[in-house]
Image (cartoon, rainbow, N blue to C red; front, side, top):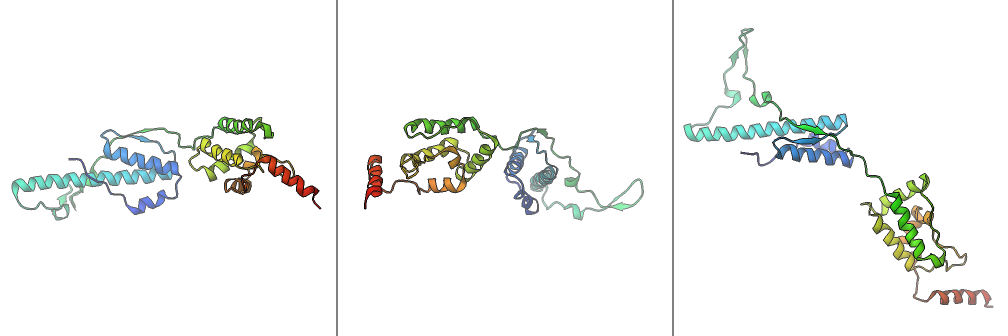
Length: 245
């Protein structure tokens, strides 16, 4: 009869919160596989401390499974013979044939062989960003608003890669590049200011959205139109202010 549940002790689990998400995920996956499969294939952790903690957890799983199976067997025998079977603590000591000394009987749970398992390698590193998709996504926006002369980018240097990676982590936690740039596109759509209708003729560019404070203002709608007047009306209002006296 398979064990219906497993025990995980806090003294081992407390270490997991200090590990990377990848290591924690791999350990929990290994626990599930080890507990549910007869010939488990485990993910290799490539971390000595994490491997030791996992080994301790798997040993405790073996112990509890043995305890459970022994209990089931004892209950079965008890049903046949009657009476409660003696525990290992109640068993009489045995004589060591080599030294002639009295020793307690060895706990069969401690003596059991651990379950045989295989270990396979798995890359636990964070997936790399698709910088080509990021470049294409921005250039598609620039092309859509070509008449406003929003500049395309010709490449992604290290500085840009580092900056956009940080912005994606902040504002698209699951790394959804398409969603990230769709939000930017919508904000550009509803902002005349970002499309050059301002006193400097400035238009939004890729490096602008790579800046944390600027991107936050953009996404919060700070640059969105305050009214629904057309661009021509806004330009005319600006001209009237310049010539008024």
